[in-house]
Image (cartoon, rainbow, N blue to C red):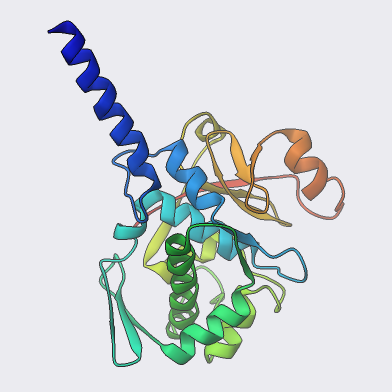
Amino acid sequence: MTYTNTFCTLIASAAFIMSFSKPGFQPTVPSYTYDTAVNTAFYQGSNADFNCASVAVIKASLCTFGQGNIFKSSQYSNGSTTVVLRNNEQVIVTDQDQAAANAKCGFIFVHDSSIFKTARLMYAVMAKKAVLQSTVSYPNGPNPFQSCQDLTSSLLLLHGEKGGINAEYLPVLLGLKTVNTNPSVKNGVTPYVFGNTYHAVFAFNAYFDNYGQNKRLTFFSFWAHYSLLHPGNSLNDTRFLIKDI
């Protein structure tokens, strides 16, 4: 009986581990394996692609909620995808919108076409939502999306061609919000966004996204490149989780 129970436990554990490779798998708890699958599926282009904030927020959001839960629903019909965000707002992405977002996002595919397709849809949704967000009043300062009068201008903003945008402004474009956290989050598996005034990255379990590769988050691996080599940028870092509104 002992051997049988042990064998069954091993089989169940193996099945659980293998299930992480399934497209859209949603872990019940934050998972290093799932975070790695998302992180290595695609990366920010390194040549004139300044969309690090968008990539960081998309990856952190995917790893927080999973592909199957990043939207309440997503339905394609008659040349457009109707997306209901987690806060119940609706965004419609036409085939033309998606093609424009695909051409502008600069995402480099590595593996897992399912994750890659979802990430590009999220980028298109963010661009369309930025246009809607441009008319919203921000009581504590100027609207960061006021220049997004159409899809073209919002894609330029997300791509960093208008001076870039702080990553903390972007989760609202997916119907989500930020929650500031402290450095202790680095020691857990909770996905979060980490950065400074020069660069933003998706981070988890003491690793950060280094162009689609897991890299240990240390002073020399991040600060030496993204701060010390760019004097004028703040040494103060920001860390935030992505949560439901």
